[in-house]
Length: 123
Image (cartoon, rainbow, N blue to C red; front, top):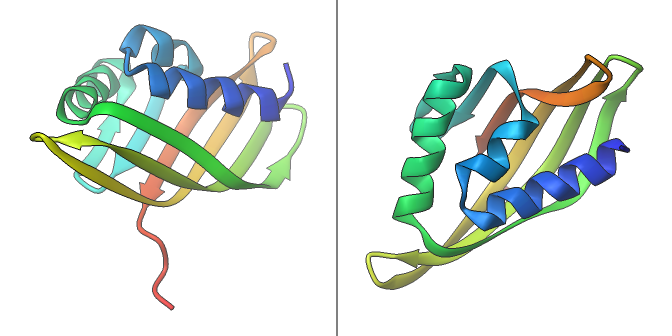
């Protein structure tokens, strides 16, 4: 599977709002940083993703402006913009920002080992 296809499938998995679809993309030692904290290991990732899925109903998530800052046989770094929209407490809401994902190739497959989602830069 190409790295581009992997991120496209990850985007689709996030749109399902089901941890069982998102979990296979993450390395067992993965670390994710969101605005509300840093989460390490699949148990913490499951908890925070499930909380996010519950808080945003009917979410649509997309990744755009993908740029590969680094690609090699065993590792890669992706930079992108992310966008989401959905319903929070009965009201339409949306947001987005910049993301960085670090991937490693282990056991003949790619895994997300780190993901950082933050705000768009000012200016």
